[in-house]
Image (cartoon, rainbow, N blue to C red; front, side, top):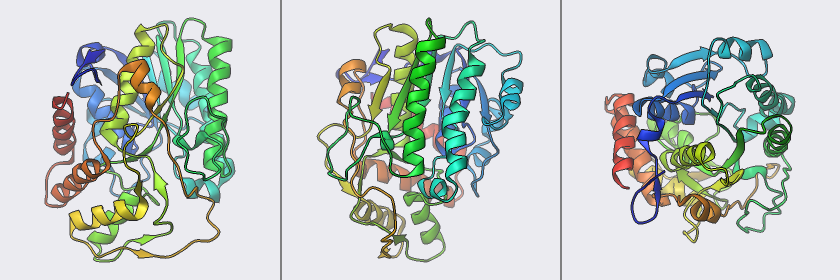
Length: 358
């Protein structure tokens, strides 16, 4: 792994050049950023995902399908997975495909469990036939821990749990990955990454804070917050993906690499509430102040924090952007895109700028 500023690990383009990578979830927000970053480093990327359900869609705006081998299919369908893998040999797998919205999972819990648990199992089953595979990294969530809303930052050894369907399905996926790793992949590093709440340009998902802010500002309305007092481990999409790529490289080259890691804000950083982040975002875009509409029946955790110390000690990796910097970079992307800037060019510019911070 390349080392950047001080002893902080940086994404190593030389490692990724020519690597054959299977990226699931490439049509989503994080997946589109990952596809652009990997392809810009010379990786040979094959994507497997459903068509994007966002309007507008970063995948479409940034022309991601022109940069990689994009194969549309449902990870819940074994035949679709087999078609996507047919004739392909992979060195590395980054599994990001998921039902990733908490409230959507509450509305349709069976679909969330089918995608996040059985979809992961079906993908791992299909990968058993990959003879050149070096490492598989499945992305779960910071919400995999049994959370009592006490505000304590969870570490990798804490008990898994989940009182809502999304959290529970991601915790269950952790167990599925551990089981397959021990049973079927003796020579392949199979691991999970537990990421914090990610923000960044190009997210137009339903029920995500930044996307809701952008939609409200562009419509001349005030964004509505359910829980402005709630805290989350906010991190920019580039920090999150840099952690995943650094971890996946370590898994491929280091037998002692951990098999589960948290990725979130720098340890010891200030907590930022939903209301504080919304205030920063609205101010940056020149929108109306947010308003509060309580949802007393919500199952969402009020306090959520993860301890990313182990990523620092095991990989030399930590996030580079604090919450205000992440918000500034995010809102700059949306403001420039609304003014006519090309989405792909914006992403690549921010990737290059992030790498230059090393």
